[in-house]
Length: 340
Image 1 (cartoon, rainbow, N blue to C red):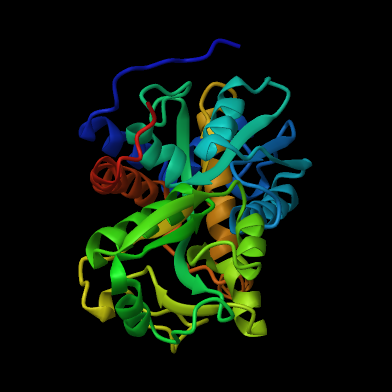
Image 2 (cartoon, one colour; image 1 turned 180 degrees about the vertical axis):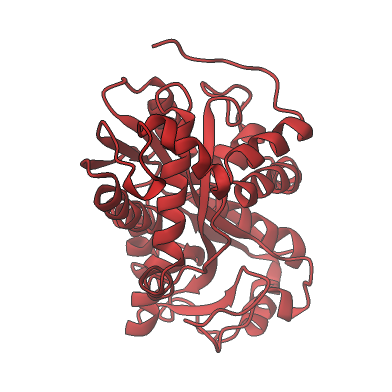
């Protein structure tokens, strides 16, 4: 299969046209593929392969398996979920672009592959716009700023910052993905503390080392953070989102600490590979995913995982891609996160 290498990005008009085409109203395109059957009767003619850009056990993996079950139930074909972590999601994105035609190939990733990486990397082996069809934004995932209470005595973010600024000391913070890294870098920029990044390939590895006292703080995804917060092994000092969340109502946002411009939340989304997934199939997948996540069971699943429900639509996904490619790009350049 030929790899598509496009140097240009879609224009705003083309993006909006693509969004309209992929809206949930695209069900009108289904009967042609379903040989006259109604949209509700539409079934897939081959299995679905979902490649997840992060390791097993994380938020992206959990939601991929949840929607995978929904697709299998509605589409009548098996759904295979594969984890391909590494290189800020680039390994998974390239795998989807290269995937054989024996299945409909989907990517579960987020702000890394379809926003930040355009600035971090000089060249990508995939085009975030032209190689993928947006299906849905599935969840918003704020980060919790965590410390080890055995290593850090301060119990509030205000006290932590006062301590961090003493004697010109240099702290260390972990990141397990691009969003967590950007949250940590933005926090450092705004609060003017000295800190160096310690990168990890998975949230679980970073959490293990936080508990082991290997660094000072960690902007961690909620799925990994919540069990340890409840167990008392780590302490949450602040949230990266613009508003507090239901699962941690007593934890303030960084914005509440006097930094109103701080709002760094990642999003988890799903795309289909345009080369191996016809538009009518993508439309059906988008509709099924939306139905599954909008249901009471889907909303309950998201909240229990520490995820924030978000509009589930291709249009919203395209908006986020454009916004964060621009806004995160500025943070990435200022923080010197670009690869040589």
